[in-house]
Image 1 (tube, rainbow, N blue to C red):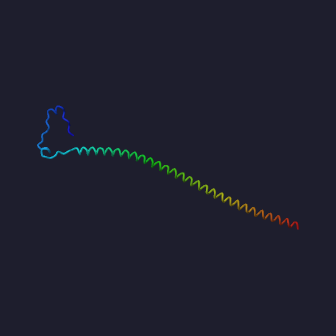
Image 2 (cartoon, rainbow, N blue to C red):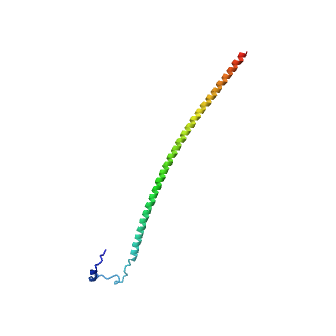
Image 3 (tube, helix red, strand yellow):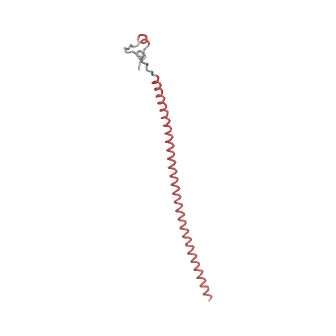
Length: 133
């Protein structure tokens, strides 16, 4: 970086002389630095765009992470609820099975009692008919 001359130096100093001929003196076209400046401006624009894109990607990543955490939490809640329902269903099936067994025992007892009553009725009839004889 070149330093700017002070006002007093600007009045007393002369531009440095060169022993080399300029591009123009040698018949060469001077190098146009405009494309370089345009390129630098484009690079700076792209850098700025990348910076903005990076910030937006970070925001999107944060939102994705939040969504992912929410989804995982909801999935865990659904799994726990499903396990609870499966456990309740298992308990209800066991209760139904137990009631079926009790019902079968009750039916068996009823059949036994019917048979005993039939036998008693037949015995009473047999005794009643023999006492009449």
